[in-house]
Image (cartoon, rainbow, N blue to C red; front, side):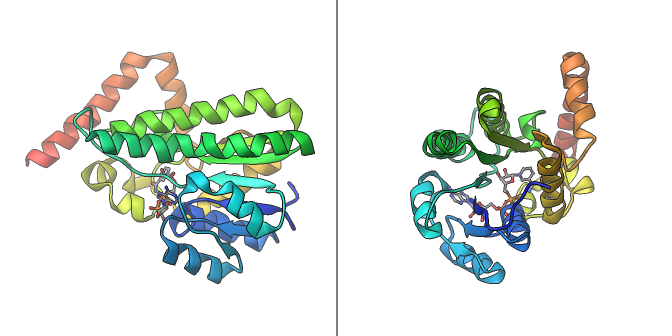
Length: 255
Ligand SMILES: NC(=O)c1ccc[n+]([C@@H]2O[C@H](COP(=O)([O-])OP(=O)(O)OC[C@H]3O[C@@H](n4cnc5c(N)ncnc54)[C@H](O)[C@@H]3O)[C@@H](O)[C@H]2O)c1
């Protein structure tokens, strides 16, 4: 078992949903937890429920204030905050920029501050809440799919670069999870994600199993591994299948 008791843990976007479930689980395992969220009231509510410390604000600027709140070094950083930006190339420039900022650059900025300290101490753990959309691609959501591919690539890069120097990295890639974000995905979410959606606690369970086993890829929906293999081995067949879903979505919205 990865020893969690007394570890200093930060979870971004933990005011609700998956982040709150991760924070709750770390707190239950005896960690000292910082709950971050852009929404101050949500951060304080979750923190109050689990005996954690609330550090509200943008996930991008959270390492220094979280360190201060914890009174020292961060052992585990969960880059979980995300935005579910939909649309295609027609989505406004600001929507693309926000998706890039929260879904990718917040991870890069956190790692920039954490990695030197972790290398000096000989260890640290970076947990990235990506999405199955980072391995596959989500219909009707180009900014989300593109930036989650970026988040996955960044987690891979961190892992392959630092794994021999004591830094553990995990990429969590769920399909639907019953949270506010899923509820806001509309028709595409209803068609693709809701039928197999799991509870946020199942995501925390999957992460803890992966930490125990020292495994990078965390798949709360194990079938995602098969889809990922299918995409890599026969891209045109896979794209045809996804296009079938796209057409079904178009038929539903027309009728
Ligand atoms: N729900 C799903 O089906 C699903 C599936 C795969 C991956 N994910 C990913 O899981 C993560 C958590 O999403 P969720 O489903 O729990 O959604 P959620 O909407 O319940 O929670 C996301 C939280 O992040 C906060 N947030 C947004 N921008 C922020 C910022 N810049 N700084 C700090 N906090 C910010 C929000 O206020 C919100 O409380 C996201 O990265 C999301 O992309 C969700």
